[in-house]
Amino acid sequence: MMKQLPAILFFVFFFTCSANAQIPENGYFETWQEEAGGLYTEPPGWSTLNVLALIGAPQTVTQTTDAPFEDYAARLETKTFFGNLIPGLLYTGNFDVALGLNGVQPGLPYNANTRPEAFEGYYKYFPENGDSAVLFAQLWHYNTQTGKRDTVAQAAMSVLTTVSEYTKFELLFTYYTQDIPDSMYVVITSSGGGATGQGQSGSVLYVDQVLFATYTGIVPLFGSIADKIRVYQTQQHLQVELPNLLSQGFIELYNLQQQSVLQQALTQTTTAVPIANLPAGMYAYHIKAAGITVKKGVVAVVK
Image 1 (cartoon, rainbow, N blue to C red):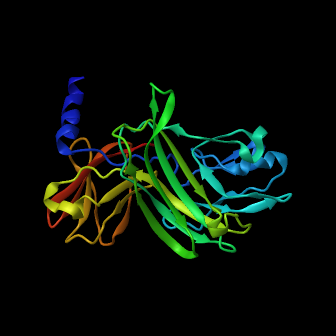
Image 2 (cartoon, helix red, strand yellow; image 1 turned 90 degrees about the vertical axis):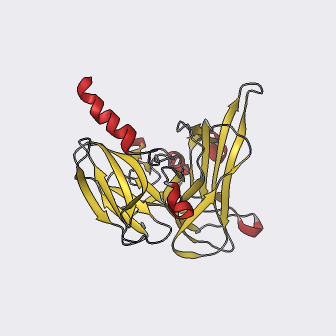
Image 3 (tube, helix red, strand yellow; image 1 turned 180 degrees about the horizontal axis):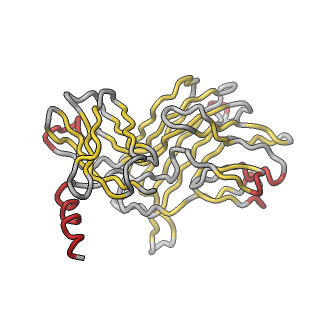
C-alpha cells in the first residue's frame, strides 16, 4: 500500500477533474455484434428495429465505413415491410418483438453522477419527399414520492433538409430541475415525418461520435476559449477538439512516474492522438498553449 501512495498523490495534485466518459456507450459505433445467429447486427449499448428481422423484416440500421473520423459509423435508412414503414431507429432502451412496431421500451440507467451540458455528435442526411431526421436526448430522475420518472433535462433537433457532408451537432441540454439524472433516453431516427408527419421510405441518416459532453478541467485564465476544449477517449485515440487554434498548442501525456510519454502538436481544431501503443495504465494529460496549461485530465489505457 505504501508503494502506491506516490502514484495516488501524483494524480490527486497533477490534474483537476476527469475527461468525459463515453456516454451513451459505444457512441462512436466502432463495435457491432451479430444477433440471432447472424440474422441481424446491432451496435452494443443501443437498440434498433433490426430485431424485426426475426419476422422477416429488413434491417434499417447498419454498420458503414463512411465515417468522419475512425473506421465505422451508423447508417439509418427508412424501409417498408408489407406496407408498414420501418424507420432507421437508434435508441437507448429495449424492444419487445411481440409488440411489433409498438415494442420500443425506452430508457437506460445513467450512472455518471454528473449533469452533462450538451448532446453532441456528427451526422449527414438524405431525406425523401420532405422527410426529416430527429436527434433527441432526455435525462430522467426517479421521483420516490410519485413513483414516476421526472424529466430533468432535454436536448433535441430536427434535420429538415439534405446535409451531404458530415456536420457536427451540439445541442445544449435545457434543465428543468436541480436533480442529478439517474436514467437517460436517446433517440436517433431517419424519419421524423417532416411537415407532413409521414416518414418516407429511402430517407438515410448517418451518425457518429455521439456522446454527452461535460466541460470540466478548465483553468479560468483562458476563460470562454478554454471551457470549450473537448477531450474524448476511444479505444485507439484521445480526440481533442478546439474552438479555434491555440498559439503553440500541444498535448502531453505523463505516466504514473511523472514521465512524459507522448507529446503531439495541436495544429488543427480536431486532432486524434494515438494512444493504442501506450502500455496499459493511467495517464495524466496536459493541453498547453504558449507554454501555459489550459486543461488537465486523465485517461485510462486498457489492453
